Every structure is written in C-alpha cells, then in structure tokens.
Image 1 (cartoon, rainbow, N blue to C red):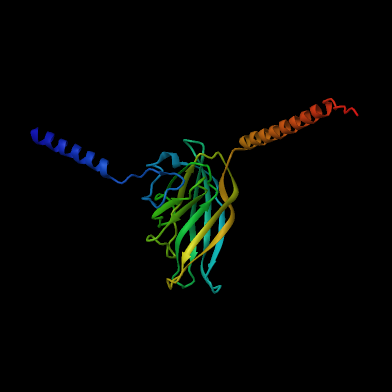
Image 2: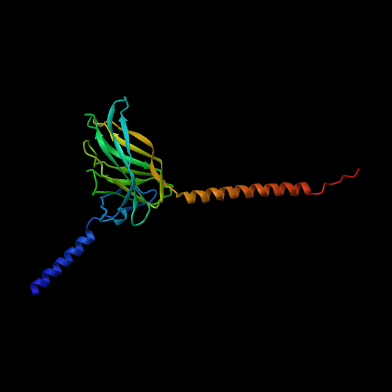
Length: 246
C-alpha cells in the first residue's frame, strides 16, 4: 500500500514537471514589430480555435528565376482560408506544394504574407495536415503590422518536400483577394536569394457593414463641411455694406 502511494506521488510530480516544461502547442499572438518569434507547430486538438470549415482553397502557381533568368524553382501556393468553428473569424492557412527545383538544388527560404494591417494575428503552423516542413520563426512588420514573414531556414523546404499549412488566426470576419504573397528561394549554389510575388491572394478585410458605415460617415462629414461653407458664404453676403461719405 505504501509503495503504491509512493509510486502515485512520483507519477504526479513527474506529470506536473512535464506540464510545466513541455513545449507549448497553442498558437502564438504576434504583435506588430515582433521579430523572429520561434514556432514549434500545433494541432487542432491543442488549439481548438483552429478547427473550422474551409471556405476557400485555390491553387496559385508560381515560378522563381535567378538573376540570369534561369528557372530555379516552381510550385503552387495552396491559398486556404478557414472559418473558425469556435470564433467565427477567419484563419489564413497557405502552404507551399508541388515544388520542383529543376535539378538546381534550390530550396524555399521564406514566405511573406501581406494584407494583415490592423488585424490581430495568432500564428503558428499545423503539424496535423498535409506537408512535412514548417517554418522556424515568424516576424511581423511594424506600424499596422501589414506583413507577416515566415522564415524557414534552417528548416528549409528542399523539393520534393512540401510545406505544412501555416496558420494565421485573425479577428477578421471577411476576406477578399487583395493580399500579396512573396515566396523566397535560395539557389543551389548558395549565391543569392530570389523571389516572386503573387498579387491578389486571400487576405482579411473588414465586414461589409463596417465599410458601409465608414463610407456613410465620410459622406456625412463632407456634407456637413459643405453646408458650413454655404452658411458662411450666405452670412457674408448678408452683412451690411459700409457707406463711404465724400
């Protein structure tokens, strides 16, 4: 009996220590200006807010050439958008797939998403989906935080390996093809970084009602300014004219 109690106590202590020091699998809040925040990967089981329904999933082909115009890497961006079951907001989850370096030994070095200014971003990558390589860290630009840059090195994606789904959980209720995605590769000779930018990728936008309210507010301001200008002009015209006596 005493031995069983001692064993149970040891197991409890070991479990508590493991929970305290085990790597965290939740998505990480990334604020504008955060630099090189390490990523370890997560799952829908560990981060339930990431579970949801796919609402868009287009494939966007890309080609990267070197300074001499030689093709060093081609592939597709799977530009997935998911609506969170728990939150109702959108998760932007692109991944790199169908990669071919055309025997140049070139590899994916990083990927930059643009169009996230003024939206909150909880970021990581998914280890429970397609692909086999995730980014090493993430950086968000300053100011409004428009750019989210995923840096793979040293976890480079060397074809035929493919990227895991990235996960950018936002507070956005709507999306449109107004974003940019830049894919950066290093050539096999190690002489330089080269990239290409896809324009018109999925990115968050305010809900239509918010845009409508903003437009109405601007029209209201313009109307009030114009009305004030007319009143000032009318008041000026109604002022008595001074009579000068000779």
